Image (spheres, rainbow, N blue to C red):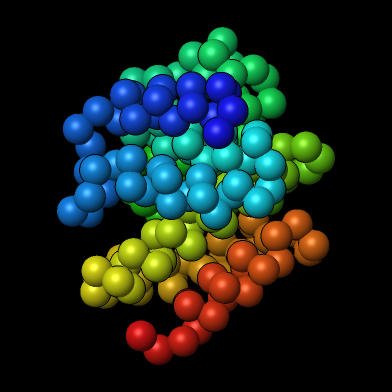
Length: 167
């Protein structure tokens, strides 16, 4: 890993502190998402480590920009859920935001599908039917907002197969 990737991982792990990802330390999820994003370059891997830090900790987008630059901060902002009273409200606003992403910040959409793939795979592995059903119900709207033809089709094929295959 490069210095910036190590810095992003350490920053995220420290920021998430004692948070858990199911029965695992949160670093488990961050490492999974970053591993999937690695094929798309250093920036994708950095964004993957930081993808939940603003949503789940006291870190701000401004903190991310100061530490990692504008592109990384802009991409983290894309994948960070918007505010809302319910998951449905937050996701509706977030998916609308993702639907409008173009240009270099589309890198964030790659990280978002890596994140969703990790979440779906873990809900299957952990037999968390409630979470799996939720991801299935959200899939069409999620795909409509985050999919860009040719951007990371193999990840989408893997996700689509998991969502449409009885588990």
